[in-house]
Image (cartoon, rainbow, N blue to C red; front, side, top):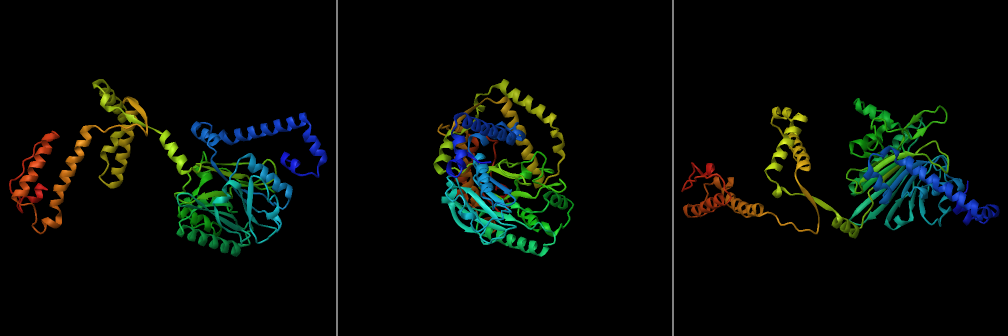
Length: 468
């Protein structure tokens, strides 16, 4: 099968060139191509149809798309062209490809492709090989590459804001008899991940790990040490790397397979994309899909991330963002009664009574705060009138709030005179200074309608701590 771009660029197919120039044939090919793209889009988004905002984001914001695929040999020029066509159709930004089996001539194939460029492992092995294909718009961000291994390579990218990202593509040994070689490779990758973290890089590691991820997670859930094949997985889990396909699966315990054996039809999940903790670009979605233009017994694993924004774009988006403001000051007695009624119903419906018997500790304190916050926000959203304001709208804070700031500042200044290091040395305000501070405190009590408090006229060792 030839893409229209191949036909246009390759003069050795005069018959195909003439065929494509026929208006009816060209229209038919274009219609069929558009229909295929539409079916691919619908198929990819079927599983997230209920999440309307996510679907809109994926379709309209041009998210950062990163994928990995075991292509089962890419030495054929036509198959490489079909891979590039697939990446173009799906608007992929980065694609890690494994088991390429490429030759020394691979870097020169489609070197002038208008959309994509690539990095290939320079150690030639016709049975393995890895590569990273990236859109040309990301080429200026590439600062460093490591290509001197036939089973893993990595590319470093520097983004604005001192954001450093390292993309690692791996292809681990599939042969169970190659235990020593696999363990050596896993040790190298773990050392690489350690140095990457020490250099403050954010990391994506992806590819064909040739180890059953579902068996690994089952083994971990049973607190087993696990097979020697899972050494790298253990490191990734212990260092809180995110398995994106598992995270965005409808059933995290069964995210779905990425490989189907041509011999017996057995399915396993051996391809994956992992991101390091606090990855700067927020992941939006991850799924698998079949390759259309070329054949492989592996599925493509694709992940989408929040687009990389420039400082100007981020500032403009923030200006357009509106915040929700609760108009508490406009509420009357009827509104407050509705608030009380709804909160009482929520309290009973969600069995908040059980939280009253919790023992006093930090964990339960956090739980109580979370539950009370849920109750208050839910009730406010239902009963309190609100408005939405942009960042340009200036809302002066109520005087009842701002007047507290100056009072708290004065009280804090007085409280500092009663620090333990002073009291332990019998140092506290004398009669004259204490009288002045007491007048300030009484004035604050009066202004803010607080309960009256009587202080002693003179501070002594017997009453100073009680006064504090």
